[in-house]
Length: 294
Image (cartoon, rainbow, N blue to C red; front, side, top):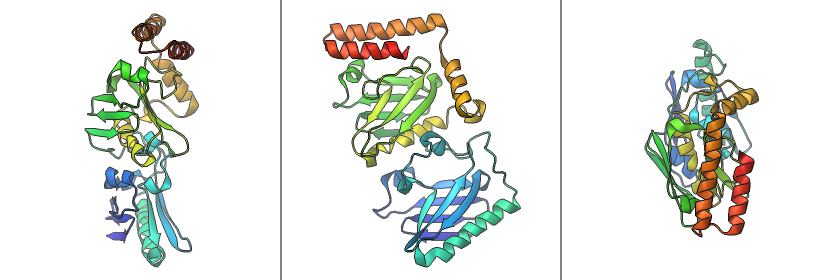
């Protein structure tokens, strides 16, 4: 057993699994504490490195592309302190960190673990049900459907539509961008009907606008990850921009259905306008955005 225990957390390697446990110190980000222990199978590891520094070092593990739904959902946009695959190491424990890294590298070599992308997720992601309260509302996922309950501070268009319920089978993908504290983030649920919608997150009833506490809004990545783990693996869609275009094209309804979706969205907006929920300016702006999206 190769193990290193630090205030930032604990890494333990038994030859087949790297078990990563977050520390309990207040300096450990809320996201890592909430995400909890991560058991990384050796076959999911692409490499490991220890980066020594003057006062502290960094022990980092790199996973194979497509192995982890967390990395797939967040796209490398998690802040460094919230990254569960990064451990801050005190300078006097540098030797131990090097030993742990070397043991993992030796096992990768002996087991001849490939570095190519995986064909399926090798980590399960967070358990469900999972629910997170964000600045724009509460989003919940029970394994089969997403539910969004809007906050009192949400845009009037969103609150007027009521709770949003989306079946996982209707989802094409989940888009997530963290709230950095300087710029708003969002959690958007892309369905067949909304794949080309250009509504801004604050107006989009299929998106959470993340503008409040960056520390708490970061937890929406838990929901994004849990859903991503249950969507088709990226290898089934191909890679890169061409795959994205193919996915988007496949998600577009037939022409007749596309027209019906547009009419239904416009009809809903018209009813909100007539009921006084939307002002003339809000109605005109939202209608224009919907038309651009379609």
